[in-house]
Image (cartoon, rainbow, N blue to C red; front, side, top):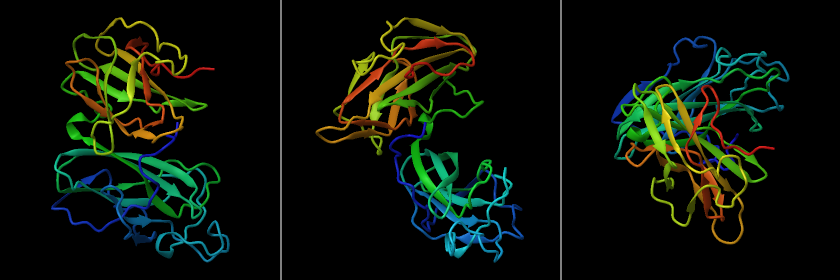
Length: 328
């Protein structure tokens, strides 16, 4: 599901920053079209600490129709040819970026990069996580598009579509890494049906001993500055928001053996009436009262409803998605 209200507008990312230290994340530019593909420096403002420093696009010819629109150009006047079908990471397109933490605590950033045409149509987007960026530090990396659809139009621009950042010690663990707690908490991409939103929470026992939850996940709703959001009532169950399978089931103990999963759901409507609409970009989740917190980014666009329903934890068959989505 493409989230209904992204945290930040789709903007080109760039601001010349001088970090007091620099590190590298992911692959560098080395060798990808370095000799035949022009690299264009970019000097536009950063988006929440993330900026694109240069964009590499395929070399062009003077052949008419090389761009989507006559006379259209990419960043810095560089025109890009229509790409052969089935290309992505090997297309010669890439963007070098920097992530600079100007705050006072170590943060993990997740950045959505959009590869767009001159008209703003997104041909590909890539989500990159940059972990544990210390205060005053700058981390550099390179992002490339995924596989472009057959007949994809010319990519002329790379933009930062969305930035989220969480305290490094509360970031969801990366795939294949089990945190010291032995449990991994994450949120799925969610689902929507006629204004009804449902996001699944997934709890995985990646440790070496049984783990038991009984009841509901414990939630704290946070704004862009990670401060508590007031005026929203959290219901155990659906709270009358809608009838969705599993939300009003009574809670019961769930014991997860190593490798097993449980799931719960968050449900709300994005209705906007009188009053000020409320958006909640971050949710701090505890699987149970004594669990370490994990901060997820479901981007709750609660409108003016002031209500969020939460289903109890329940076991999830191996390989299945989190339950608790609208059906029918």
